[in-house]
Picture 1: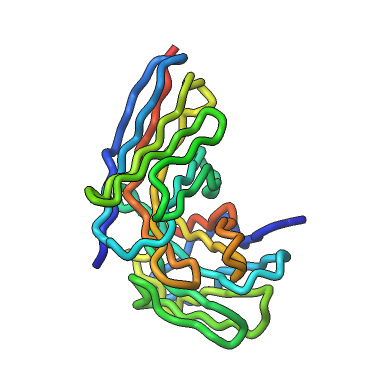
Picture 2 (picture 1 turned 180 degrees about the vertical axis):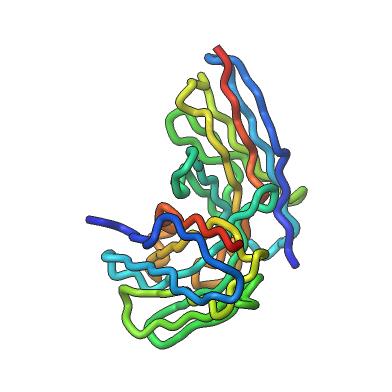
Length: 111
Length: 114
């Protein structure tokens, strides 16, 4: 099947920028998403990007998409302790909002 | 607005037992889906539905049944629970409107099969 891959862990200091990377194999992806999951909670949509865009900025979040390399990244500026969570990238193929998720990246923000 | 509501939040089953995980949404969304989350594997799609009366299989459908008799409800049935079905289950819903791309997730059901 189609794969979405992420590194498992990232540790940053408070105030630094965090960059979480994701690669995917399905070139027919229409939308690519970033979700955040806090302990014991469901998934919260952070942002998404349409496949014909290469960048999207939303306050502290910047999403970069390189379609040629099938690489997606999420940059969090001025990372805070409240940003500590698991971050999932996901892609959507076709209709029905069927999503393929990556394994998730655990972000730890240290003081 | 309650959003997506899943019940129960926690459940322990014995091998071979059956049960139904409930999912309800009050946003009049056409699309609903079930995922399971396992450590190191992200979320995997079990079954999904694009509207009342229509369901289809996802990536890992074996051992699970679904039905969609109303727009609001999308229950997931385990007919004969196995330890391999120990997982956290998430239900999600979203709109068919192309301008509404967010999938809303429930809080999850943590299932343990012993």
